[in-house]
Length: 102
Image (tube, rainbow, N blue to C red; front, top):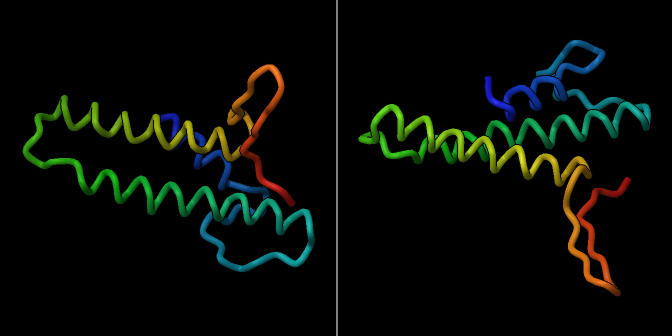
């Protein structure tokens, strides 16, 4: 299991045990968590799937695995930015951060 798959599944197996839920919760705290999971799921399934579908089928198994690892690593990096782990540009006087707001 790749880092992206591990991250995705750890983030989507939330306390209600329903990682496939499209039912929006009503409580504020639950809603924020649900939105985070929904975003992760969209990125994982749609973006990752789109990129993997475009890997050249004629590649060797080794090259295919390397391409898939590159996709997973890039998506994992994006998830880290969205989670606030990374994502800043700075110099001596200015700083720009990418982060979500609630």
